[in-house]
Length: 469
Ligand code: BG6
Image 1 (tube, rainbow, N blue to C red):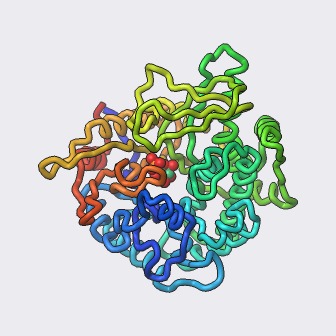
Image 2 (image 1 turned 180 degrees about the vertical axis):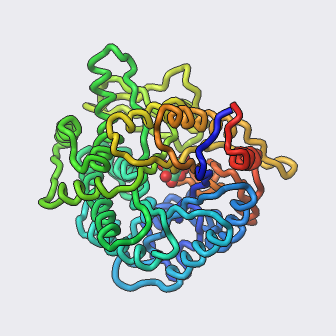
Image 3 (image 1 turned 180 degrees about the horizontal axis):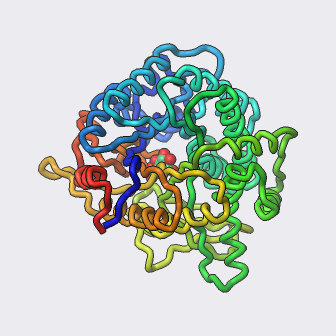
């Protein structure tokens, strides 16, 4: 029997665009996803899980099921419909109401400022490749810190900078995306890290009493052949792009020589170079000392081998097994080992990767202070039968990840909480509504919530404060 530490957060995670609905009402401004999804005619961000109207019900469920923390994000364009300038009072009030309900229900809100939803006006002008977006983000953060100072103790600046960079500039699957532009991906990562640092520095200089950090999406990158230098180098390329470049900036406030040399080499593959503006590194260095914790999203790990052929970028989204391929010239090829199980969307299930990543952080960046697992969960084709959802594979997935998480804690890592992705079924960016992650099933026609078997199981973990493995 393994026990969780006192005060552990047994959380559920959400994101504004994926759960709120009411995307173009109540004064909310557009995000690039609105037109993108409408053009594709596939699935709309509305009504999503209707959290905008049903947050009271969701927080009541949290209280009943022992979920003592909720990750929510503020939709930037609900506060500033154009990204900057005029404020939308109805949007401001909405989040006050959500946070008040969190307090009433004894559910701690962990609040992210940006979860893939830059206001369209700024996105159309280059998103974070345009330094004007960095400035606008800092002003938006300033507003939120002041407005919600009494409501929010735990802040995150960004959700998954790597996902923004890779989906927009490498995989090209997000609105107006490009493929294989490694230079743009690294530039996006750097600029967003500067925006993060400036927001952290502002928060601390204003003397607010809460805490602040950032959420990174991490995947362990294993070389297919651990004895091959070429495979090790290929795994390092992906590692720098997704993990090390961002963790260096977060914890050291400086890019290591290894990160910089890989980044510069990969930028050159796309014919570009990384631009670091005067003052950027000072902001990063200051914020690294002030950062209170890391939010770590973990879903899977990767096995990489050397690759020099043409780019082949083909991804999940169809639900068909074995259809995803990622081969990037000069970077590497992702290989799916036969002995690693996969989800229906080809995501590799490898719980030990979470342990390996946490332990790496404790060793490579020992000043990390604390980690929250801010997302972990399994996309699954849940079926409602006779009013019940039996999602055994999800329970196994979460149990195994919690087990490795506890092993990392036993080995000395400071992990303060774990948030299941997701609290309730929500909209999935590239997969619409049939890829369900929630502890609570959502009937997307009626909005009704139904606790899945995993919700009852998770409630037991929270109530007993221990994992039965
Ligand atoms: C994380 C994101 O990367 O993965 C979430 O923070 C996202 O927003 C989740 O939904 C699962 O991804 P997907 O594509 O399966 O919905």
